[in-house]
Length: 486
Ligand SMILES: *[C@@H]1O[C@H](CO)[C@@H](O)[C@H](O)[C@H]1NC(C)=O
Ligand SMILES: *[C@@H]1O[C@H](CO)[C@@H](O)[C@H](O)[C@H]1NC(C)=O
Ligand SMILES: *[C@@H]1O[C@H](CO)[C@@H](O)[C@H](O)[C@H]1NC(C)=O
Ligand SMILES: *[C@@H]1O[C@H](CO)[C@@H](O)[C@H](O)[C@H]1NC(C)=O
Ligand SMILES: *[C@@H]1O[C@H](CO)[C@@H](O)[C@H](O)[C@H]1NC(C)=O
Ligand SMILES: *[C@@H]1O[C@H](CO)[C@@H](O)[C@H](O)[C@H]1NC(C)=O
Ligand SMILES: *[C@@H]1O[C@H](CO)[C@@H](O)[C@H](O)[C@H]1NC(C)=O
Ligand SMILES: *[C@@H]1O[C@H](CO)[C@@H](O)[C@H](O)[C@H]1NC(C)=O
View 1 (cartoon, helix red, strand yellow):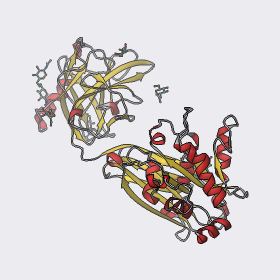
View 2 (tube, rainbow, N blue to C red):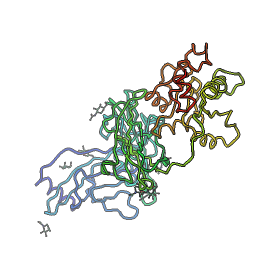
View 3 (cartoon, rainbow, N blue to C red):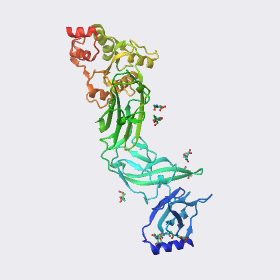
View 4 (spheres, protein in one colour):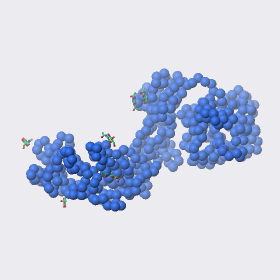
């Protein structure tokens, strides 16, 4: 047989490696094995060594076939266990061959993969690549397992060909199996592949998440004015080796744009539990008409993944502001009168409106439940110069932030001017439980703290507390007058 001729030729004239690769496969699954060396310019022949038969190229219905450097089993059967040889035919008539051994394991109840692990260990920071999946075109991972138990939960991020274990620890070490399906000419085949993972992480990435801005946001601008667009993204736990947050304008990196008009500045910080954030601000020295047609895209990327959001600019609507401040406070759903309500409905209006001449917008007083609340809130907020947020334990502990809180933080963060005034009505202590965006504002500007002693003369507009509040409020004729007078 031809096969013999080549094998004899090979063992006589070429250095012979006695090493042979072993492939362990499950019975009934698809298996592709690959000749260890290959190039597109050479021909391959595959043999079954036990029978010395050439394995044919694919034709209709053949379960085992060869295709260039690949040998296919669609699917495997127990009798396929044995030795196979691939012979490479170079153009100068020389050949080189490799022996490969295939072991097909029968399915055993309760055993999800053959104990002979054939794929290299992964000692990494959390990315575990599904072995062999690259051999299969258009394969889809159905499920990952660790030590044969399905993996699920927020600590795992599944990519097309890998799974990412967030912040891997010793307990994450183990056998990871990916199960995927491969469709060949309409027939569906299962494949599973297992490898050992040993964690080695000093830091680990998380799926990059852009906190602000939100995709498709429209930012109001004035022509000729300066503009700063901030983009903040969470990228992982601890300082990341690869962490990029950057702006593109119409898909062109700011680096390549007109230096005199566009600048980018970036900094990073760590939040609670060592979450690593990066924030990049795009400064535009002067907004031009053409910017109103452009897409401003913030791209965040780490070694795990990338994500992006796109915002556009729009000319500022020409209305005057009506309110000096919109007040955000935790709404109580009980009938008990509480201090916060007394403060919001009586004390604060008495001092800021009656004594200092400001105009406030207070939900429940100026907006009634039942009006189309969401749009009413948004409109009033746009017409307010400041946002006053009352920090209390109730506000912090409520799972779903109220709509106005949500919108307010959001507006405050995407607009450059700090328009938020945080009133710490109860001692919060550590800010760790606060939303990221609130912590960010606190970090930038701090809070105005309500102290018990204010309660003694709460009505005094000259108390330190109200002085600090007025310092953050916009100037009005009356307020500047009474501030000077006080
Ligand atoms: C392959 O196996 C055959 C039979 O065991 C042996 O004669 C030959 O030398 C091997 N070839 C290689 C390249 O290892
Ligand atoms: C495959 O080859 C190895 C040596 O490389 C040999 O020990 C083994 O018996 C062979 N298997 C079969 C099924 O012939
Ligand atoms: C390769 O072998 C064929 C047939 O055996 C022969 O016709 C050809 O000249 C050979 N080519 C080279 C480069 O040796
Ligand atoms: C892979 O990890 C296992 C378990 O820790 C170990 O026994 C084995 O030697 C490792 N293999 C390699 C090639 O490092
Ligand atoms: C890839 O697989 C999907 C189903 O999993 C199928 O809809 C699609 O047509 C396939 N694409 C190719 C190029 O085979
Ligand atoms: C693939 O595996 C699933 C789950 O184990 C099973 O239900 C299905 O029958 C298998 N499909 C084939 C073609 O073997
Ligand atoms: C901006 O993005 C939108 C949506 O992706 C797209 O339709 C439009 O062509 C883009 N404009 C430019 C100038 O790239
Ligand atoms: C920018 O890329 C998006 C998608 O990546 C595409 O829709 C858009 O047409 C591109 N715009 C330009 C100006 O290339």
